[in-house]
Image 1 (cartoon, rainbow, N blue to C red):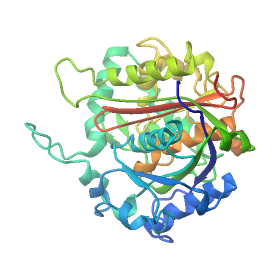
Image 2 (image 1 turned 90 degrees about the vertical axis):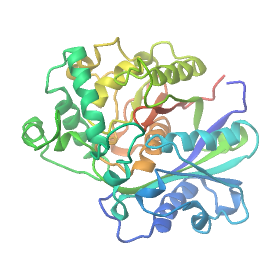
Image 3 (image 1 turned 180 degrees about the horizontal axis):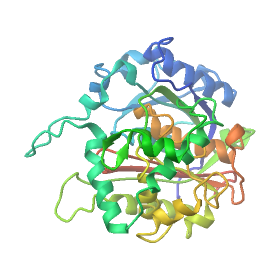
Image 4 (image 1 turned 180 degrees about the vertical axis):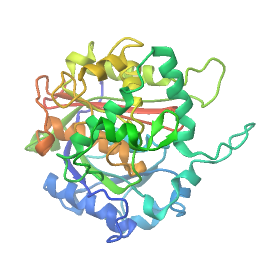
Length: 387
């Protein structure tokens, strides 16, 4: 990477629920941060800086929340930075925090991302009028459903593929005690009979609205060497593209392809399906699993749904995707990307509990996207120090 090495040495995550009425926003963040510090064997005094991320301020109606959250995060008198890149913010926040380490600015950084959707109205927050367009007023599902229909027409995917992902991820979430949704009797019939929201997205094909937070402590090489279970950062990348421009492919965005290509080059990945043990990928609507399989180069264009149908992405498949249950099972929007990054780190640290997958290469991928499929952030972590 041509920079100083960095590693995740502490991970903390709240219980995700539809409404965490037992804590304030500050209390929610502190719950995740305290767990990450304890996992790292550190206290607030050991932290040099804090990087915080969340989705738009309009969600909870609190402008610049980082200012009042400094007290709760032990950041008084310390550098503090806020990141915002729509739904990908959890991933980009992690990368900004990691860059403070790899650039040599700090030695130990605490990064936290959150959303308390029970105190917000995300559909309203996502229905801001676009310039030169009639207001959609349909939230994220109304925006992404036409793109899914275009993918189905383009690839010839059968109609049940999205439902297969819904069942797979919800069954995986049953092994994750912190997941928001636990549906013990979930099966294909239940998903198929759930009501239609936005054709072809049915109720059980979409993510929940969650309260939750995620935190990580990231340290430099000496901090990583001293850790009992470091997750070394092998590569990290961000890309973005405008929501609208001539010939933009919204089904398979170029920014996602470019971001993955940069990431794989940094980490020496030539065949992601073989070189990685697993991936935590941002799939808020079930059909985005086959779409991202193609966008991230795990298969050829048009073949993503075939991997899903064959069970390749199941926890016991050859390339497990979202063994934690993924965004389909927990979705505190601002934290969802960081959860993907943190869950990948926990897998290579062998600390994923009952949903730990088999580690062969010792490397895993975290992925987040946001906006109108226009912001991308990704990283690869491993159990061994990068060369």
